[in-house]
Length: 151
Image 1 (cartoon, one colour):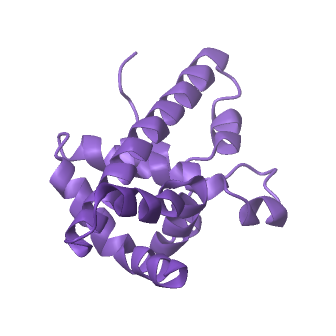
Image 2 (cartoon, helix red, strand yellow):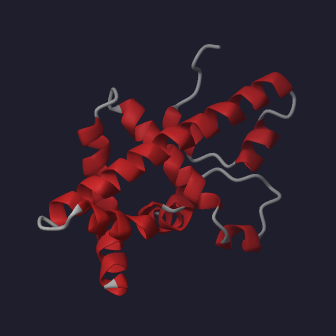
């Protein structure tokens, strides 16, 4: 299929929105949902690498075991939800009509954030340093706060 969408627009589109927006075309809807999950999968890896890079730079004397232990809570879906809130994804995302206030409190924004990381990476022509630097600038304070709380 031709790429007729923006990676960023797709990244910040919840599956409920995609289901509604493409209700008349089940093939396109299915394809868009797959592409969103692919972006989230890619972005999860980029996010994890950016977290690892942040810790590597901050803890110069830490061995691999310490870096791994510190990174665990930062790489989980809960970490992605915190990053999503830090960048204000809920203010710019596309949601379907059936989303409730309770849904907004869940981890639905975590997957969108992961997809956004994938979109930034692809949009920078797969330049990891661009995605990493954006992530550190937007989410470094969240990482620092989580580390301080766990120490």
